Amino acid sequence: MLKLDNIHVYYGAIHALKGISFEVNKGEIVTLIGSNGAGKTTCLKTISGLLQPKEGTLTFHDKDLTTISAPKIVASGISHVPEGRRIFANMTVSENLDLGAYLRKDKEGIKEDLEMVYGLFPRLKERRRQIAGTLSGGEQQMLAMGRALMSRPELLLLDEPSMGLAPILVKQIFEIIQTINSQGTTVLLVEQNARMALSIANRAYVLETGKIVLSGNAKELMQSEEIKKAYLGG
Amino acid sequence: MGSVEFAAQQLINGLSLGSIYALIALGYTMVYGIIQLINFAHGDIMMVGAFIGWFCTTVLKMAFLPALIISMTITAILGMLIERIAYKPLRKSTRLAALITAIGMSFFLEYGGILVVGPQTRTFPDVFPQTLYNVGGVTFKYGDIVIILTTVVLMTILQFVIKYTRIGKAMRAVSFDKDASALMGINVDNTISATFAIGSSLAAAAGVLMGVYFNTINPLMGIMPGLKAFIAAVLGGIGIIPGAMLGGIAMGLIESIVSGLGFSTWRDAVAFLILIIVLIVKPTGLLGKNIREKV
Ligand SMILES: Nc1ncnc2c1ncn2[C@@H]1O[C@H](COP(=O)(O)OP(=O)(O)OP(=O)(O)O)[C@@H](O)[C@H]1O
Ligand SMILES: [Mg+2]
Image (cartoon, rainbow over all chains, first blue to last red; front, side, top):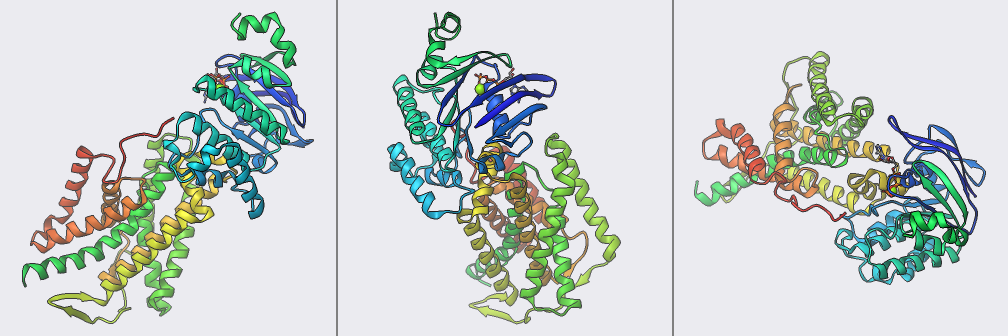
């Protein structure tokens, strides 16, 4: 459903993505792993329209999204949980969730999805009137994910949801990602925590300095010597 | 006049003047909040609003309310145009470049204004009855009541818009984080335009009120109130909407007390003294927080 073909992205003179091609199929969890500065965030920002590729094409359901702006990409069914969460810290939890549904007009559907999000993250429901900036790191991650789900996306882009969280919370967040996926949302997951990411993904791509160097079935990659050495700590 | 009457009198004068400052300060603070630009042309936008109000009441013989609404509408469009033409192309440049452009825009409106309408001062017609009310030794004009009422109504509408409407939520989101807002589906450019429109229309209201209250207008009338409203916005905490309201009112009260005590030649100096004190003691302003959000 999502297809990147030979995508090149630059920051001024810095060539951050050097011809990336990959695909995400409906219903999958695909993970993009790689070390610091490999270009993972750049790749997600390009998909969600925050960055424009200089070369290459980006298609979603055979629709060309290459030069489409971020708000229109949300409208077409892709939702991005950015690195560092980027919640609206000055607003309440429920205002953040409302903003996630900014483009929607179906009041009933929004209400249903709000219940769905509160079902996934009961902590958010308890704190719906709390100012988002005062939430703990884990709660903020939940809020960022809940907010993205409020647009009822077909494809959810997650940028390092485990960043800065205690192991037990990481486990919980990954279980929720699996739940979201089993309810019909396709997931593209960017992670540094390769072990966790590979354990829940169907397929994986490995990014190194702006290029995809390896790809394949997640379970198989987990067994590969190269991956073990570079990303799973031996 | 006893000291209680004196205090009450200064309160009335100060509230009227402060309402005008507050209306202008709101535009400064909203624009700063959303694109971190001190729009130095904002006082001149108020002047344009005053002239439109003058034209409506004098030439077209309109009543106060329709003149106010027309002035606010046209000035809102002017504000959006200024943003699109002068500021938007510079959004990715340094803040200094944008600031200098704003100062240039200010001169453009002032001297463009002189070119179009001439440098002379014009008098507003008597839109309101000139009755003076006297309650327990305190006199106030019909105009005082209109200014204070109009300001309260506009601020209430503004608070409602910001808190509950779709555009208001978008404005708060964009002020906080533009990329994250775009990821919600918010059109950032249109939201910035709307902010300029609202800020400019409030300035226009201030301009019309100033015209009917002080009776005279001229193309350079925006400079001093613009500067003082800017100080008011800094005093309240730039970027914070209730801060602009509070700062404006405080500024008006201080000025009227200084004048009432017989130091009216000092009142402009006092305004700048306040700016210096705020910048030294609490640069984030009365309502500013010193803590940053958790990241
Ligand atoms: N705004 C920017 N301006 C210039 N260079 C940038 C910018 N953002 C990223 N880069 C560069 O692009 C490259 C890819 O960065 P990116 O943030 O995509 O990496 P990443 O894989 O997400 O890393 P991490 O795991 O640390 O988040 C890096 O070399 C980085 O320095
Ligand atoms: Mg990253």
